[in-house]
Length: 243
Image (cartoon, rainbow, N blue to C red):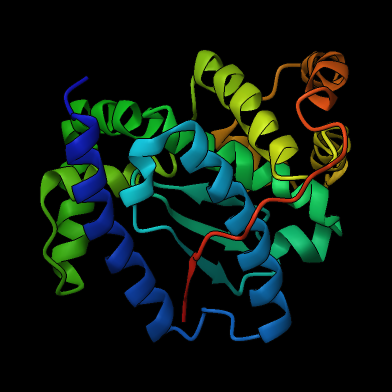
């Protein structure tokens, strides 16, 4: 670990602001009020449970950028609760609210478990990659620290098998506690695996999926249902939608 969790939050903010600034300049931030409301409500319910489970995250600047890219099936969450969702998730996978909740719960879990700091450390260790991206940012007239560049690179780096297992567990718990169907985690990965096309979804490039993942998730469903048998829905925590 070359990057502390605290530093990961600070540097992720710089990288996130740079990313959304570029998206805004390209008119890639979604303005559709119906989609905004849908994403904000689901994310807000998940964040309520995330804060209950991890009180330190109460001070995070929880936010979501909804990126207008119908060809890209992807989502991510940086340290500090800064998230992004690509419209391809809805266009290509036709996700239910329950399925989308499991994607966001999984992504939020990576941030809660400090996986961002781990991937940033890997990126920092790749000095050539950091320098290359740093030079590219300078060419665009943007100055970022090496750590902020590493935060940007971390989005594209694959998660370890251990990190994925941990995020599956925490994410499924968050979604279930937020009132969503735990069984939707299984149908989500079925859709993800069969989306096909010209290649696997970008989401799978950073989320290595073992062949037995659906089976493992299926076995977790009965226990998860016990966490919230009445499907109680928590209050929606305020989540900023980047526009």
